[in-house]
Image (cartoon, rainbow, N blue to C red; front, side, top):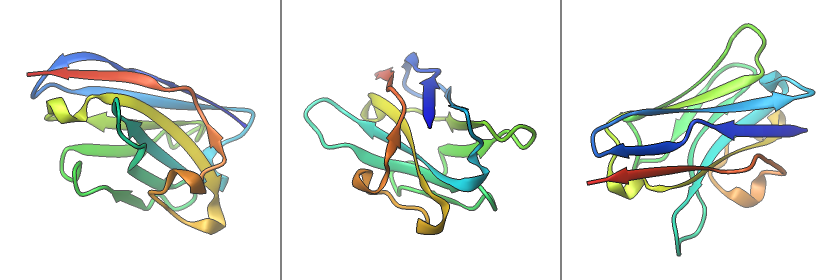
Length: 125
């Protein structure tokens, strides 16, 4: 299982970014996919997760209404995190991760076994 996250960058507050998480050697239909972030000096926290089979989604309260997790429904090898109305407090390194489908969505990083490398998101005020 290999994951590749990309799409980070620097934006001003109120701006948008779309992160991508690409799977190599498998498709997301058999996994839970989670997006996490870690700001300097803080613990890694769950942002959103998706059931790769039925598409159900869960969001952290801090991003509800601003972030949207989605997937490509063709190959099912890419999951996106659309981030709108970005705030300076969204600044962090963002990671994608997977866990087995039967375990369900979780916002706890320790529940995920496979991780992609992070992508930096910086939001300036």
